[in-house]
Structures are given as structure tokens and as C-alpha cells.
Image (tube, rainbow, N blue to C red; front, side):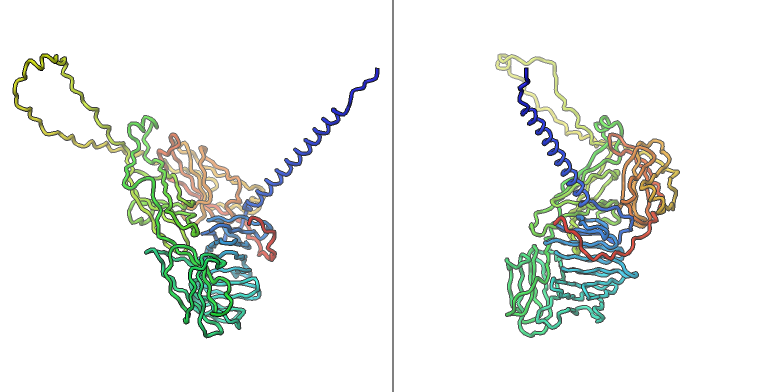
Length: 580
């Protein structure tokens, strides 16, 4: 008999399985490619070059491109800046770059620069936008197209470069040389010197004012270039001047105004001519200090009392304390409270603070710290904003080792007699007696808890390897990117705090820190350190339930990563632009 079964269902099942397999493979490949692209887009490349600067302030979208890459990476406050880096800001963005010699470059929105060194000279390639530059201890060279500006130590200027190729600057302090012409404070330079226009003088780019009494007094000034008539002044709440706050005509070259907190853009131009671009942006900051939440002012924090001892099994003489605060409501357009400075001290004047921390946050922040012992402590928090000393909120608290005494249980009277019957109380009148004499209450003396002597600190670790002044050369780094740190164990310690910081800076500004239970630690990637001299520190501690009960004396040793500095980059293309 012939088999007449229909083969079509089996064929359809095989085709469906094959199609499903291909779809899953394609989706997996696409997901893997996207993850790898995302990681490459947002990662910071390992750099053995020593940083030449730091991003000390960033608002919204600011990016950096390494000279040997084509993709842009997102910058954050504290990001290092390297030789040859391109840095750009997007619309309504801002960034401040601080260099080791004290130089500060304040980038306004839509600004692009490159930082490089050539023949021992520090050069800033200024492609477009607006910036303010204050030179530190060394001379800086500003290059914009065919224009070359030499900025002496301590000099300050505002510069602008537009898409049409017009470059202009205003000297704020010191002396500079622009295309061979010497200029002093208050003088201007422009490649369009014959144009009829008003040249802005002050405030500078990204100027900031503190509204100490609710308003800030700002004086706007300019120079009338190639005309003698009145000048039109516009002050707006947006960079395109669609919401003009004030529009005035001045016969002079300056105008004082009282401004409320907010962000403003201003421009000046000869009256009767078309308005030009914005001369600059100014921010008026309210003096509101953060609101401290915990620990509350005047509070006594008890640790190591009977209940705590029963729970922890030992006295906690250095408790971990959470500091928390929130920011006061601010105008949304200011949007600057991205970083706070938390300081701890044993005196109200904060002379030589015991510890200080920079904490990121917009609406507030918190931090847990366990390095304070018994006694009276002060803490304060202020917002960080470049160019302005904002007010701080301050409070104090006390750390005590023994909890307050529990109140004595209330005593109840017990006569041991039965209540009288109702008939007896009505039939027999009680004798008339004098009221009892109530003695004055006896106030017991306060219970003073016995002083608890803190345990002696743990000894310092010894036998540090690598030894002091150890140098790791390029050949060793090419063979392995790891570095092993070892020390002798300390009796009584069950944990070690390991940290690395650059030589010559405070230990609190550590580049890397970790905690280990072993008397050794392996740094997996030396790329996070970069090139230079470092100090590594280890401290033995004794912990119980995650809290430090006993600390030790830190041991330190120095080492150097000897990696040749990279060559001078000469890449002129801006590369592929992503992320905006």
C-alpha cells in the first residue's frame, strides 16, 4: 500500500524553527553590538599620561574627546583632562577647566577647544564659542584660526569666535599680545575692526553675582566702536531674546541694573541698527543655604549604652553617622546645585577642618562617615558654585559613649487591706485628723556615667611591599597591568583600609580606596592611576557588625609609575559627534 501522508505540515514546522533561530541570532548579535558600542561611547580610556587639569564645574552636557579617538565621552565634575583633549559644551551648558598651574578656562555654551603643548608652550586651540581665560603662573597661548594671542601670567580675558570667522577679545586684567599688538586691561581686539558696533566690556562671559539682599547690583559697560550715537541695551530671559526683560537706550557706555535671582542674556548695539548676538550670560544666585536634616543641631548621639552593648557585643567608640541635608527651592533655570561641600571640625570657626567631602546631588545629599570619636563636633554644608562664596548651613552635635540612664519604674502603693463596705463608710464618720505633712520632694543627684577609656590604637602595619620609592617602569607595565601591595598582618585587626593618592596632595583626595580582610591587595588596572608619583596607605581596623570599633596608625609608602609622556597630538578633525 502506498503511504499518502501529506508532508506539508512537517516542512512548515522545519521552516518555522529555522526562521525563529535566525531571528534570535540576529537579535542577539544586535544586542551584543549595541552593548559594546554603548560601553565604548561612555567609557574613559585608560591613560598612562599624567593629567594636566581637572573639570571643576560642569552644567548639563559637556563632553571630551581624546586625541586618539573619534568618539566623545561625557564629562563630570572631577574628570581629569589630558594632553591633546578636545572639550566642548552643548547648548545651555557650561564647564570650567582648572589646570595645575592655576589657570582657569570657563567655557560658555556651544564652545569647542583643544588643549595641547608645542615646543614647551601651553596652547589652547579655540575653534568657536565664548570663553573666559585667567592665566595662572605660566604663560598661555590662545589660537583661533590665524590669530595668536599670548596671555601673560595672571592676565584675564574674554574671547569670542563666531561661525563667520570673526574673532574678538576683551582684556580684563594684566597684559596680553594679540597678533603682535600689546593690549592692557580694558582694551579690545577684533578681526573686524572697521565694523560699526558696540563692544561688550563687562560683565564677562558667564559672570555670576550673589543676591545677598534679594537683588544683585550689576553694571553693564561697553565701548562704542566707529560710532558716536546712542546705544541700545537688551536684557532677556532666553538666549534668543524672545523674552526681553528690559530694553533701554543709553547715551553713555555703561548702565547699572538691580537684578533678581535668575539667568539673563544681554546684548548691546548701535541704536537704529539690527541687533547682534548675545554679549554674554550672567547668573544671579540667591543666598539660600542648604537645610540640615541629620544630625539635628544640639543633638546628643549616644553609643555604647547597655542596649547597644547587648546588641553589638562591644563598645562603639567611633560610630558611623549619616549626614543628610536638602537644598532650598531655587529658580529652575539656575540649576547649579550639583555639588556640595561637607566639612567636619571640632571648633565652630572650622579652623583646620577634621575632614571634608565633596558630594554630588541636586536637591540635597547624604554621606555616612565613621571617623569621629567622643566629644563636641561641628558640621556645615555649602553649595559649590564657581566664582561665588555661597553661605553655609552649620550645626553641632555631641557623641557620647554611654546612653542616658533609664527612668526608675514607678512605685505603686500596696496596703494589703480590703476596701471598706459602702454601708460602713456611710454609717461611721472618720475622725477628724490634721492633714499629713508632705515632705519636699527629694531630687536624686544626676547619675554620671563612668568614663570609658577608649582602647589603644592598633599598631601600624610593617613590611610594606613594594618598598618606599619603588619605581615601576614601562616594560613591567607592558607585561602586566596589575600591581600587588603587601604588608604584615596586625594582631587584633580583622580588616584593612587601603588607599592610593598622588604625592603632594591631601590623603583625603584619594585616587583609589578599598577595604580588604587580607594583608595584601591587588590593583587590577594601573590605568586608573595614570603617570606620576603616588603614596599608598594601609590602616588596620577592628570591626564588629560592619562598624569600626578600633582604628590603627596608618603606614605609608611611595611609588612611581614611570611611563613616557605621549607625543603632541596634531589631529585637526573633530571626528564623529555622538551623545548630544
